[in-house]
Image 1 (tube, rainbow, N blue to C red):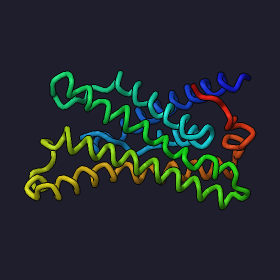
Image 2 (image 1 turned 180 degrees about the horizontal axis):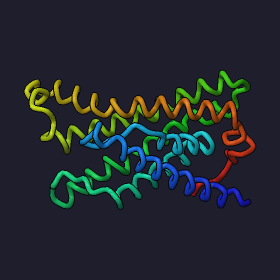
Image 3 (image 1 turned 135 degrees about the vertical axis):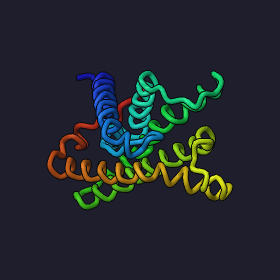
Image 4 (image 1 turned 30 degrees about the vertical axis):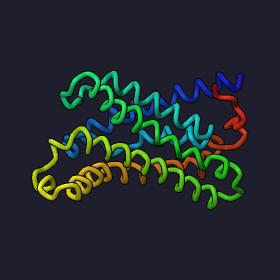
Length: 207
């Protein structure tokens, strides 16, 4: 299969799978996170593409998931059209896209000689992706959703707002990151061909 076609097919498949996993996670997490967010495996799909094709592939996969999420989401803060556009861009497009920064460790992962070393770069990449999403989600919460924060945090001023917005998002992103790390480590050990060098086509020219 042509490398470019292989890349597009993989991104489309994992973006679709990531969306399904995200929607499923939201179904059982809605009661735990009424203001949005869920604990699940959706980011694992972005991480797989990020380690397989590098940072460009990861960013594209995350962006596609965010775009599709926009089409089915109905949560906005009730602002004017321009503000809603920016809010959606941060909450969905950017928040999912930055997970793809895990691909910064793709080359080191692929060039590692042992599973122990590979797993180390998997954990580092996943940590980076989760941290990037946490920063975006936390900032979006501060900018667009602060009026919905508990009053006790608002009474503490900026410190209280920071604690709540980043703490709230960390409650679901950190467990999700841990689950994704477990999944990718298991994939690397049990089904290495999914992330193997011969499968990843690292020199693909992504236009």
